[in-house]
Image 1 (cartoon, rainbow, N blue to C red):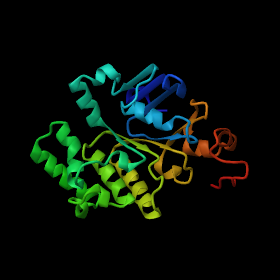
Image 2: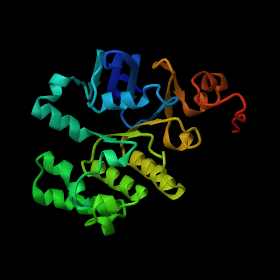
Image 3: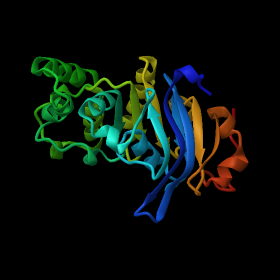
Image 4: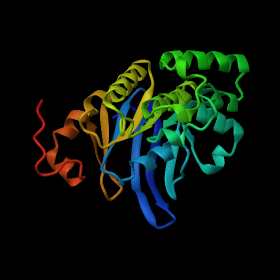
Length: 258
């Protein structure tokens, strides 16, 4: 558990229902410490993506509270331009489906969109775009249209559109899903590098194979939309009964080997 003075994201007793009927989060509480790598672990449909969207201020709880950097995050608070700008500059969200993020006519314009929206000076934005294109090795794609890109290239552009903002917290929804092996490995290595650079990373996944590399701590969600266990990656992976109960493995899954 992070120390209290290190906590930068905190949700308490969150309940969220879609259409006021379908429960996605049912009394979820979780603290995220500065500099952590935390995996939201659970089967499809357990509420991982919904929790990420709450952390990004895209959805709001029916009941419960969410605080980021010591401030309550609510729909009303995010209507305040100064609060919204500060929050959006500090928290970035990479969606599972890159097509949900990439919409500008060219890659260059896509990456510039966020900083320009935040009111940064044009010269500053141009330099950030150049630096981000170089960092993700996609400078050759700068003037191409998103529809001309492969799935892996779109993923890089989607990540670039977030990293260009230089957020403190990065939220990833199923980051390696539907990617080819080379792009998966690239993304895993990038997340490790970002963490080493001081970023706080929260990711949703049900992939156990890469967990020991991309996370230090897990919050395990049940199919009842609750967090039923938090612990180190090792503690969680060694708890076979827990993994069975939350539908992350089946009875015939091989035992984990150290």
